[in-house]
Image (cartoon, rainbow, N blue to C red; front, side, top):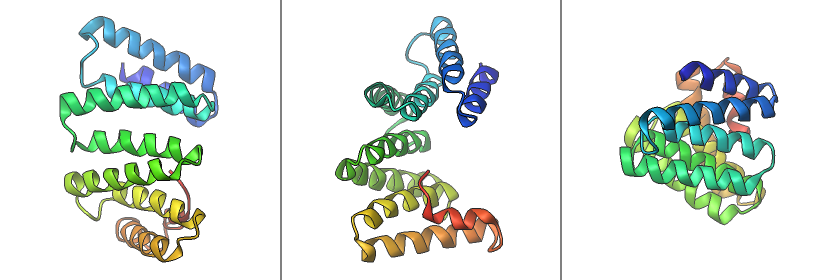
Length: 175
């Protein structure tokens, strides 16, 4: 199953979205047939399919799959599990792309709280979501709110990757 999912991820990253969708659907169907519809391995697959739909601008389908992944993950692993935070970040990014900044902001804040508690306040995943929230504030010209988020995200990345690593500059891009 993991190989199918990882190959689908490669296809998604390469922009081969139809192939990514097909493989992800296949992985979901195979797993559901083997273990039923409430298994902790399913929410990441639904999340991945939502990512594909989002990349295809099929926003209603993406939202539906993010919500399904989120509800199942919260039920099986809990509302403060790091995977729950990752799914929430994906849903927030969907709303960001749709310019629904109010919904995105609330979800990014929730994802940050989950990730800080589960992974620690200086984890790179926290930096990614801090950066995402900062992007909203930047677009809304809330510069005083954006600056400390970008500064903190940059400090986290520099601590983990070093000051010369190119990902330090990614503190100004949405993930």
